[in-house]
Length: 195
Image (tube, rainbow, N blue to C red):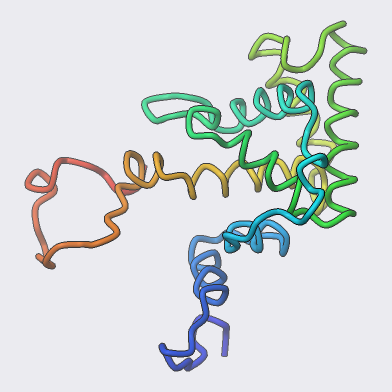
């Protein structure tokens, strides 16, 4: 019997279990620290404010997040505050090991960018940024817990948990109206729920 078919009393279903099951249904697996960050409306630990990203690190993360989820007909990562979300995750929710991997990855990506293009990653053209991102993806293929894995996961979680995306992309209705089955899509705004 799998985790989705276990009989559970709905009154006992915790918020953590509900998010875990939703992630399984969506085919996504969250690391424990990102899962905790997405769940927790908890303040960052005391002293975590000084543990966030430096302005230059945040600039690289912003550029990287915008290459992962660029602006199209929907908002991009930086349009919905993903860099601030990632900064919060690094400052207060990643484990020490994940934080070390993340910060080393930021430094390595900038060092590679300077070596190949004589400029920081954030200053490169989109095509150069994409080429470095593909190299990073190739190098970390098959591995878990890499910098690319962490930044990609944080970007996606930050994006899809933002209020803007909930309202304009996924069209989440926190208090749905009545249920009408089999309604033609033309009557409900011609919005495709999946793209």
